[in-house]
Length: 130
Image (cartoon, rainbow, N blue to C red; front, side):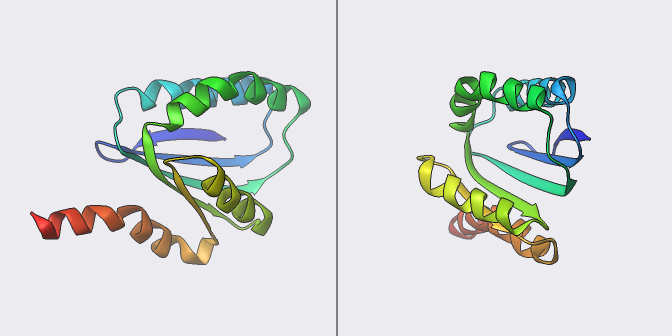
């Protein structure tokens, strides 16, 4: 499953689970790209459950779309990645250090409330300043 949903004006929630083939990734990434249109200073809540290794075709599709995805990521300021796979959380933290202008932080499932709070951190500061 690769599901992208709106969660407010500038936030997308992505939930992925299971195994992906070429078509799954193509549909999911196309949906993400479409729903990202018009977002400014956005946030992504990315939840990964029971992820299996994707097929080689799925990896090829993602690699092909990387330039467009990097361009779209400029629309977002923060991304919280919640996964029970510690290595995915570590990769998320590394990507956060490598992608300018995008803070990415990995969380374990039991830290989901903390991930939500971290995503909304700047919103609370701006509301208090107003």
